[in-house]
Amino acid sequence: MIQFEKIEAVAKITFNRPDKYNSFVREMALEFQKKLDECSHDETVRCILVTGAGKAFCAGQDLKEAIDPEGPEIEEIVRQHYNPIIQKIRKIRKPVIAAVNGVAAGAGANLALACDIVVAAKSASFIQAFSKIGLIPDSGGTYFLPRFIGLPKAAAIMMTGESVTAEKAESLGMIYAVYKDAEFENSAMKLAKTIASMPTKGLGYTKILLSQTFNNSLDEQLSLEAETQALSATSEDHKEGIQAFLEKRTPQFTGK
Image 1 (cartoon, rainbow, N blue to C red):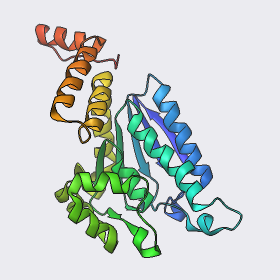
Image 2 (cartoon, one colour):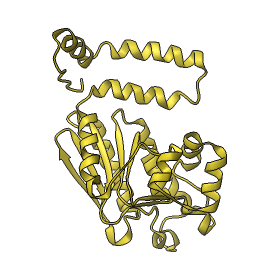
Image 3 (cartoon, rainbow, N blue to C red):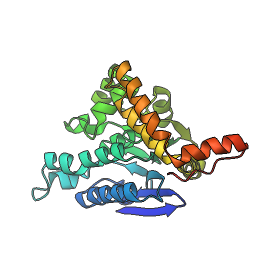
Image 4 (spheres, helix red, strand yellow):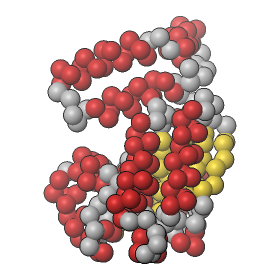
């Protein structure tokens, strides 16, 4: 259900239920959580790339499990499956890239939006499908989407359940970039390798700062920047960056 491979310093996690559009069941959600934890603690992993097998990125929850009388209750699914995934993605001090190769619907769309960088194939789409079955957007959707594109547009997209194309998502500010389908896999991996070669600690600190920006006042954010800058300056990568600049060479960062 979860395919995992390490390519240089990139951990590639692939949702692998293509016949079910990579929709989540309990086993898959818990396995994904486990892989995120492993990546968090593995110092050789400096970037995480999340994508889907087949035509879809992730269609959200497998509804057969959700309506199974012997299966988990809906609140249990949200609290035990999806909430920990979103929290782990946001708290892990390494860049997480969502490579949306196809449709991302429901929790699948919001899982992508929770990642630090989102890229999509031109044929991909994002659907807040919850309203079509009488549910509300979960997995952080009501947190991330209004912050990215504003409340009025977020409300309309969530209430109508419209399919947002990759190109429209980029123009709205939902995602970072759109790549041609034929070049998508290589382009996404190239981006991940580039990010993985950068100062991982510094990027992790940047992630912390960005997570606070909508909650802090300007004075609070400036203070946090000063504190975090001091921490960044103690890293080996900072020392290497300075030395490389002085020696007029390309820095060789190690993520430490």
